[in-house]
Image 1 (spheres, one colour):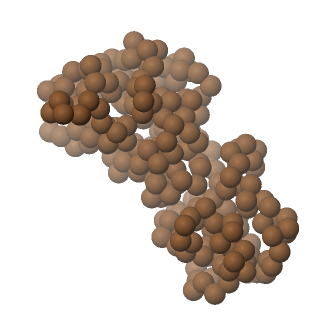
Image 2 (tube, rainbow, N blue to C red; image 1 turned 60 degrees about the vertical axis):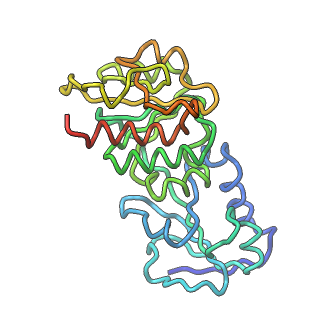
Length: 253
């Protein structure tokens, strides 16, 4: 297994790594993203291609357990800290190829203007826990940003992501689905009976400040809400989606 040592911040590999961490356009053009941390990297499934590992000098890593076809670069400790996207680096970064998104026609999540990558990652984590592997996104923070990847806790490795230019494309792709929009003005989800079970479903959650677009709400099979005590007027987008997905997937109906 090939191993190289990088000592200079001007090294082209370091420049590439910094770009993959900070530049959405570069990640998209290269069809790559990064995962940082031993636990997260250990969650990478066998069908995901890892092209490179960057390891901080002195980090305890069993190199024999890393992918055989991936290149390994050892980096001086201080240089690694300057590159890392985390406050307390664990000493290893993997460069990963985005897998080809293939829509299987089953249940889906629609992210409508979600701006917080932490919320996106949490939603992905919940979706995978509920067996939902299709994520449609429009006007959102990037699904493959380092923060979203970390928040997904490995969920991002299991999903197909469909980033759309407009909402009409999403509605067309999901035309055979029951579309449930989450909105404060909707019906109580705990009192709603999901009847049309021969169809797959999609749950749509909107921007943290402004909620769902009218385009999505008006096209929904039903608008649903989570009951609240009245002391607070709204729930976090990721929390709302998580509760709704669990009610739909695991409650006895």
